[in-house]
Amino acid sequence: MPKPAAAEVDAGGRAVRVSSPDRVIYEATDTTPEVTKLMVAEYFASVDDGLMRALRDRPTALERWTSGVRPGMKLATGPQDKDADAFYQKRVPKGAPDYVETVQVTFPSGRTADEICPTEIAVPVWCAHMGTLVFHPWPVRRSDVDHPDELRIDLDPQPGTSFRDAVRVAGVARELLEELGITGYPKTSGNRGVHIFVRIKPEWEFTDLRHAAIGFGRELARRDDGVTVEWWKEERGERIFVDFNQNNRDRTIASAYSLRPLPGAPVSTPVTWDELATITDPREYNLFTVPDRVQDGDPWAGIDDTAHSLEPLLRLWEELPGGELNFPPDYPKMPGEPPRVQPSKKVESHWDAEGNRIAD
Image (cartoon, rainbow, N blue to C red):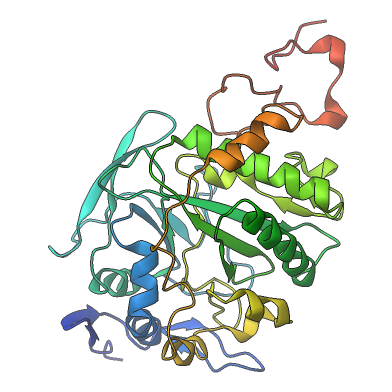
């Protein structure tokens, strides 16, 4: 059987070639038709304004599902996942067209890489040709990759909680931000969570950004007993976890208008605060429905108008009890970090202050 001819997508006036356009990326569900590779590329072109507001001039890792999304497929999260079906691309792929620009970033290990840095909508459309569904931009611009300009509040439902619980907590988060004189912009995660983004002045380092997220999470937990910042899953309970570690260097969240690798092609969708309060099923925001929404404008159109100071949140970090919290396990041991020992397995007399086991 002959191989289907490649298609072309108009991306901001640039023709982008898409190979295997008929490849099924998402199978049909009870509520949505199947989605082909060409449809993914056309979707990204259709949300040009909002998607580029999220990606422009940012180092961006790609989440590539080259064989599509099927039940049981796995995303590689480390070298142990050699048989995974999808993977993160942190370095610019070979053979990228000349309009795909890059910027060098430094990982926590000290290694560096040239990551894609989108400057026009043709870039994410070409990434769709490469099997990309999710874009993971850093919270920095290429003009200064060491000083974030974006705080990301990730409200992550734990077992026993739901999207509606995350929406309720988001309402409390909105009130807190407003009290601090800060404007937050909410979006659905595309799954069960809620994300709130805040533009900040690029005057602080990643450690400050993380401490600001911890301070905010602790104040949120003080106001609402359905919130936690406990790093260890066994201590979170049935609460909404404020994932402060998403604000570390080389930790990213799915961008606004990214697809998610779940049935029905859901989209991480910017919404107004009033809209968020009424959403019962975030899956209603998907590849088929979101393009019509953006015809009326992007709810995040004003996100770049004001850059806030981190000082109010850093004061919460300094004033509220608790001190430093654990970093992700792939990070080097960080100053002031508690022992990296699961609480239920910790025997005080067998661990030193740095979390190293002491021989019996």
